[in-house]
Image 1 (cartoon, rainbow, N blue to C red):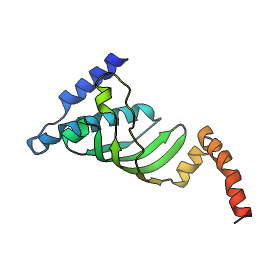
Image 2: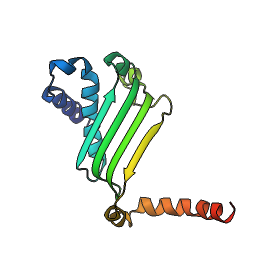
Image 3: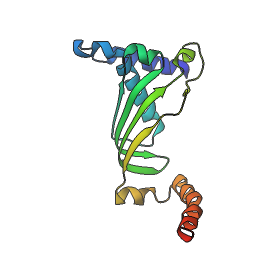
Length: 151
């Protein structure tokens, strides 16, 4: 499995368009492609997916990512359907130095995410029987009732 991931990563590197105007941002472009590849492997379906990472090569390689954004359309994950997703994270810190020594990738600290989800009536209908949605509603329903009864 690891060899397959390395081969896929190598293919991504060699098939990327390295024009001169963005040549100095090669780390963010390669990682953006790798994250897109990984995200596509995790979802049930996705029509359009764009990942944009900002930061200098040096900052990213040291594990500091000032900003990351994800945009997707027609996505489904574990039965939850969404028409559109826009997410932006900032001040992301990762343990990339340890990853280069064979350790698993981990967050160094929590970071804020601004996220907008667009859910159409068709999305809600398609998601209505998803076990993860049903469980989430069962978990939150008592708290909503409690807040409503005792303001």
